[in-house]
Length: 52
Image 1 (cartoon, one colour):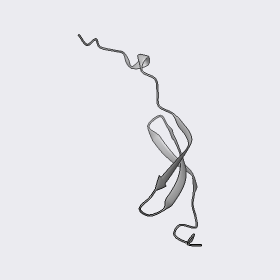
Image 2 (image 1 turned 135 degrees about the vertical axis):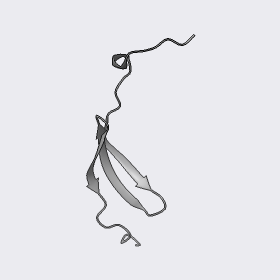
Image 3 (image 1 turned 180 degrees about the horizontal axis):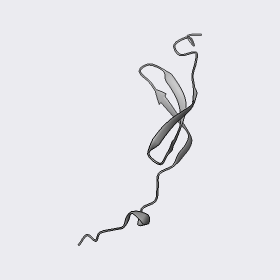
Image 4 (image 1 turned 90 degrees about the horizontal axis):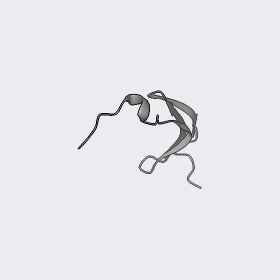
């Protein structure tokens, strides 16, 4: 039996300073996700230039 839950019973998802990395294009950034909105905090401005 499944019972209905109120929204207040579910924990809210908050990601603060969460690192993301794309292995295909080598893009790295840090995001903050709160209240259903994504904000990019820091990005790798040297994208594609780290071929050392």
